[in-house]
Amino acid sequence: MAESKQIAILRYIHEQQTLTGYAPTMREIAARVHLSSTATVHGHINRLIKKGLLTKKDGKSRSLHVTPSGLRVLEQAPASLNMVPRFDLENNIENSEDVDYVPVPEQLIADQEAFFIVAQQNANMIDLGILPGDMLIVHRQDDADDGDIVLVDLPEYPKQVYRFFHEADHFRLEPENTKLTPVISRSLTILGKVMSLYRPNIQ
Image (cartoon, rainbow, N blue to C red; front, side, top):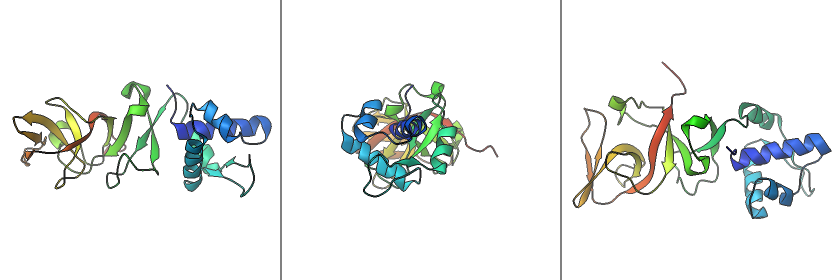
């Protein structure tokens, strides 16, 4: 499977540095990572620079250089792993421009372009084995079937995970925690369906 765009750009720049001694052009990068706009490439480059993974000399073309931090990221993100964006739940998921990428084993996802990762923030789903701090792999979608585990956005309960049910004229969001009660709402925004998880630390 393909890498994330930012990791693919970083890897291509490093390859060209090694082979030719200088960075590729924006058009060459766009062609290599299958982006139609060089403006999109510039956006990714600027975010990589902000993260300290690239440097660029002002006013000079082909002056991009992968930093030691960028090399470490490439070492930790071999092509055999998929890089999935991790979003902070306090930020807008769709419009967040400064995201980190997390390597995910291929068997956990089918298409990394459609997935993102969030950290479970509370004990809503502990009876199902989803613990605070677990990294949830979420498929980006705006609908769900009854019984699906979803990440939802409500004015009073922003960006939380529940089991979803549609009942008559309302939605029922069921926590998997016997100490909590269901949330009933007539309006909600589904941000995605939780497909899997991994646990960074076992305590």
